Image (cartoon, rainbow, N blue to C red; front, side, top):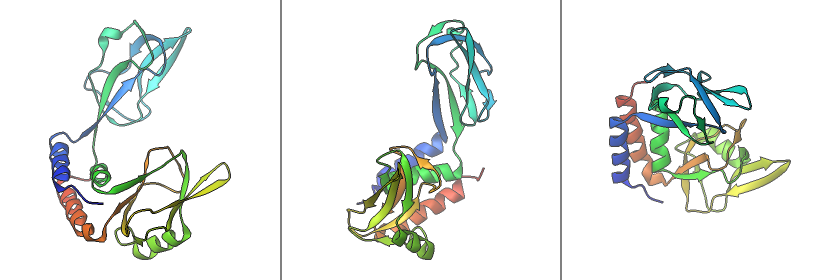
Length: 210
């Protein structure tokens, strides 16, 4: 477990020069692209209709899931038949301060990801430690149960297999189902905590809150 300082600095430089997350919007199924409800450069919000796709004589709206600016809109596909997965446009979502922090932490920390789509809960010992010490101070030891995965009335413990580590960030909400592959916890060695604290302090100074 070790932080690649150069990699973190390169990522910070990249985010400064291009502080966006680019979402490629593709067709969910085959059909005819009948109309656009947005233009190149339009600002959109979650739930806003982007375009209409006709399938079996039914018009089905495709909506945005994020806020941002429309780019690379494919006007050449209007009224043409398109296959499923055809790129139609991009949404450039401006990263908030918290989103930048999340990007950096997922690169800097040892990230424990969800092995399955399920609900996850901290083990009782870890929950008590997080409440007492808070993220960034709660220490875990080899072999300890970190989380409990619950799915279809089945509970499976997830153990910490590495060296002693600090839980620096909790990425999930215990009330929500977490898709497989999504981050759950971010761990680091106790010695690395001051460096990560300094990096996050820089981000909070440089990135305005939204």
